[in-house]
Image (cartoon, rainbow, N blue to C red; front, side, top):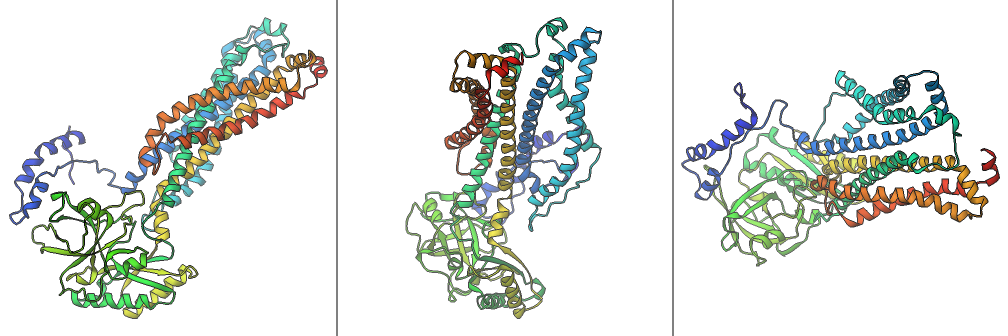
Length: 601
C-alpha cells in the first residue's frame, strides 16, 4: 500500500513501476531459488491499482453486468418515453380546436408550450416518485440476490441527496423527451386552418402520422435489442446449468472442518483425519465419503509448475492440484479410467503417488499412457523437493467454475502429506430421500464423536453451483424482465398507434366499404400498415442487436452474441405478439358500419 505523491496519477505510477520492474526483480533473486523458476521470477511486472475504495472481488465480478443492466434500464426508459410521446401526440391532436381557439384569442405559443410541458412534467414527477418507493423495495431484493453464505453483501440502501438529485434529473429529462415535441407540434398549426377543417377530416395525410410511425419503429427496434439480450443471457444460464461438470452434484454435502483448536502434531492430525472419515462413512444416510482440500467449483485453486520428462510442453507444464483421500472419485461419481485409487497403503513412508485427469494426459503427454510417469514439482526456496508417480487416470471434472474448460488436474493422496493443514473437507454423498438438514445434524454429531472442539460448517454442492452462477442468474432474470417489459411497451405502442389511425380514418374506411371494399381488404390495409412499421423496426433492431450484443460476449457461455437461433426466436416472438396487437384494430376497422361512420361527418 502506498500514497501517491502530489501531481502523480495512478497511470503515471503504473508506467514508472513497469519501467523499474526488470531491475527490481533481477536484483532480488533469492540465492536458493530453483533454476527453473528464475526466468519466471525476473519476468514479473509491478503495477499500480487504485485502492482508495478497497479491493473488492465482488465489485470486479459485478461491475460489468450492472453497467449493462443500467444501459438496459435506460433503453426501457427510452421506449416508455416514446410510448408516452405517442399518447401526448394523440392528446394534442384531440385538443387541436381548443389550442387553435386559445391562439386565436391572443395566447402566445410559448405559454401554451409551457402549459403542455407542465402536464408532461407532472406525469414524470408522479412516475419518478412512485419509482423511488418501488426501487426501495426492489433494491433490497437485488442485494439479497447477490448475497451468498460465502460472500455477504453490505450496501447502504438509505436515500440520500444524490439519489434524489438523480431521480429529479431523470424526471426532468423524461418529461422533455416525451413532452416537448408533442407540445411544439400542437402549437404549430394555423388557427384559421384548424377552425375551417373538421377535426377528423376525410383522409388523414401520411405526413400527419410520420412522427408517430417513427416512434413506433424506434420502440420495436429497441425492444428487439432487449429481447435478444434477454434470450442470450437466459440461454447462456441454461447452458451452464446443463453443462457436464464431470461429477454429479445431487446429494453431495461438503463439511468444512477446522482442527486447529486441537493443536495436534502432524502425525496425530493424520490419525484424526482418518477417524473423521470413518465417522462420516458411518453416519446414517451417508452412502460414500472422502476427504479433499478443495471443494469443486468453489473458486479456490491450487496449482504447481511441474517438470515432466518427455512432455512436449517442456517448461510450460502448470497443473491444478487437489489433495484427496481414497474413495473421492466414487463419492463424486468420477470413474477411474485406468490404474487404481488411493489406498491405506499410500502413507507418508511410501513413495508419493498421484492420479491425473484426461486433460492432463491430452495436453502434456499427447495422449500417451500416463501410468508410471514421474513428475517433479518445481519448488521455491526453502521448500522440500517433491516428486510423484502416476498410478491412475480419471475422468475430467470442472475445477474452479462451470464456465471454465476442463483443466489439467493432479490428485495427490491426503495420507501422504507429512505436514497436513489443520483444515480439511469431508465430501459425502447421500441418497435422494435424505433431507439435507437431518444429514447436517447427523454429520455434526459424528464430528463431535471425534472431538467437540472441531469447528465445522456446511456447503451443499447444489447450493455451491447455484451461488457460483449468481451473476449469470442475475443477468438472465433482470434482462428477461426488462426484455418482456420492453416488448409489452412496444406492442402497446403499436396497438395504440394503429387504433388511433383507425379512429382518425373512420370516414375513409367507411367510404371504402361503401364503395365495395371487402372486410378482408380493410383488414389487409390496416395490417399492411402495421407490417411495414413492424418490418422496418425489426430490421433496424436486428442490425443493432448484432452490433451491441458483442458487449456481453464475455458473459455468455456456449453461444455467440450473434447466435442465429436466438435472433430468429426473438424476431418470431416480437413479430407474433405485435401482429396480434395489430389484428385487434384491423378487425375493428373491418367491422365498421359505413353509414354510422359517414353520419359522424
